[in-house]
Image (cartoon, rainbow, N blue to C red):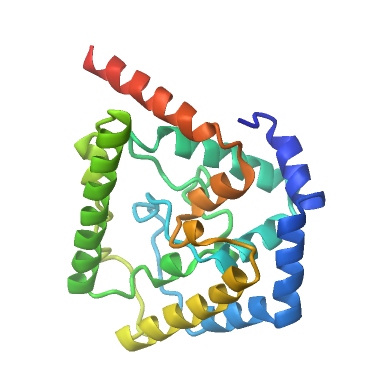
Length: 241
């Protein structure tokens, strides 16, 4: 595990060839501009800033993650702070609910201008579609729970399995995106991502990852996954005493 986040941030900014080449590729192909044009189709509503919706490592496409890194490269201290919060979230994620590591102490998003599509679409879904999305997430969580039981003898608590971000009735937006446009934007962003698979920047194992997982997958030591398992077992055993 890389515990020196200042050094890791400096490496990402100045020495990470994969990120540098991917960012150059995106600039050459106008992919950041395309992504932002898709984002511009999604209107922002009135939010009370409660932060209740920001509890997940939201699904993030690679071009979106690359856009976030390109933004953070201009702010080393913010990148260092986020790396610390990302590691904390990752290490605690299997046994307790945590807020998104992109939030500050006032429930404000530190990367709001480059936040992923999932965040931008929150509040645009109907109550019915929101519930459907939750049920899909719940089924995925059950698969994950079985995986950790079968492979690591680690039983993820139900409070993690059943965690639900409620549909927000306080969010006000008179220009909600239609289901058809949502689908089109998602498909268009996936098409951008396909180029990065084809060019070898990412492989098929990186498909459909969350924002936290991108950081862990690309920047942290592989041994961190095993350390998380052992740490989670220890914490869960302490809770049973």
